[in-house]
Amino acid sequence: MQYSIREAIAEDMEYVLELIKELASFEKEPGAVEVTADDLVHDGFGSEKLFHCFVGESNRSIVGMALVYNRYSTWKGPIIHLEDLVVSETMRGSGLGTALLNEVVKYCAKQGVKRISWEVLDWNEPAITFYKKKGAKVLRDWDVVHLDEKGIQNYLKNI
Amino acid sequence: MQYSIREAIAEDMEYVLELIKELASFEKEPGAVEVTADDLVHDGFGSEKLFHCFVGESNRSIVGMALVYNRYSTWKGPIIHLEDLVVSETMRGSGLGTALLNEVVKYCAKQGVKRISWEVLDWNEPAITFYKKKGAKVLRDWDVVHLDEKGIQNYLKNI
Image 1 (cartoon, each protein chain N blue to C red):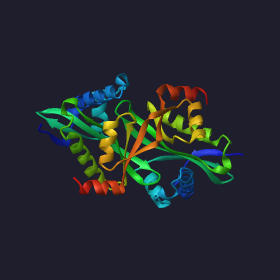
Image 2: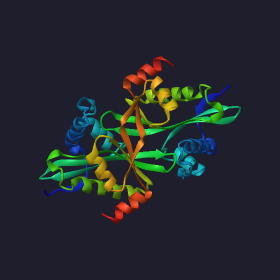
Image 3: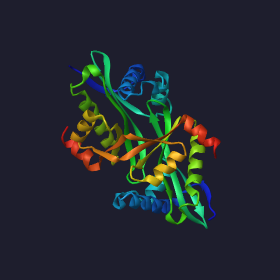
Image 4: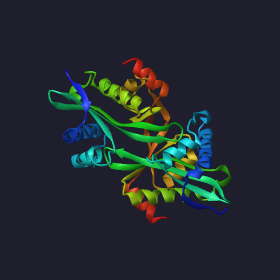
């Protein structure tokens, strides 16, 4: 299975969205994706770039992607967050996940950040094994907290 | 205990750093803070603003702070992350934590984001109880992953 990694262009976003949805389904939240391909084009390639994206291409199809953006750690300063790393099911085991992560780490090293962070579901053992093998630390004692759109509205009513 | 909340200015950063260190000690990582007050001034008040900070002031002292920045969700679009919410030990139980979180939620609502995210240590039950009471969801099945500075260097050697 031949593939190549390159920086995403705006025209890739409809295929990137398919991968985002594929991952959301795998993570048991198929209905959670509200973003559209137009949003991704606007947010990633407009005047203010909110993320940076790499894609894996095989036979002129987008079969994988990695999407990152800047965060700020009050301990380490500027860091980079890997929001999604997706390999299409047809490409599992091809080394594409490693190839995409290689690009991400090279990109982050070039930016000089002291940390790359991401999040993983605690039952996603294949992903956890993969990340640990790459030298990442899975912080089992840190949980993610969300105040969602409805939560924000309810909060404001009760101030 | 009287206090007021306001947007931070560059001159607050040395006191904000003290609160960052106070939180790091509470989180059992007192040595993890590499950021300096000068870094915070540069990163928060320079030409490129990497975060937005609110402080709580009492008797002309900085006794609490909340620090946020933009993130990007591939499900919800632009979101805001609450990196730190710190209330100095002397001010616990005064309502300052709620007052700071109120400012954060109002700020996020003004930006029109669909989510505020943050992270919490799973043994920090007082914080978890507080956040849940405010309507936030603690996602116990999501873990945080870090590839740190040494991890990045080692990774690059093995590509």
